[in-house]
Image (cartoon, rainbow, N blue to C red):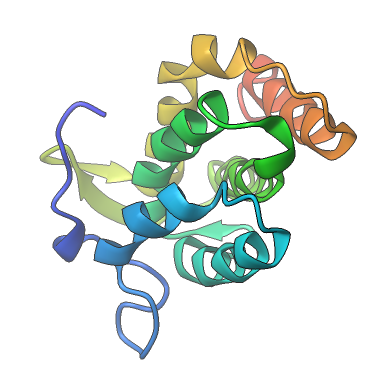
Length: 156
């Protein structure tokens, strides 16, 4: 990330309703590699319905990408299944919406199309993403899908 975000000003899908606000996203992501699968599942659904819903990323998804990559880099593969899933969902949503009119938002002080900004964030982190070495088959499948999007410039 170029600038540390002010999480209190970032929009999520729940910003206007009761639920997880963006300022909770970094804390939840840091807990997403818990050794307890039930804890990870609960956190996953809080994040899934906040930063991305049915592959439709919110503004918070842009900032979550690097946090998720860092989490995967620093934790055992078997504890990162949900992190890979969220990365894949964000990637899918960006790929679909890059060809449509996308939500605009201010990222690093500039008005940008959200889907393009997220795709660019994946490209900025591409070397780190390609160095991930998952052992779990679901994680490997999700990483292959993300790399396929990178290779095709999000035209999958």
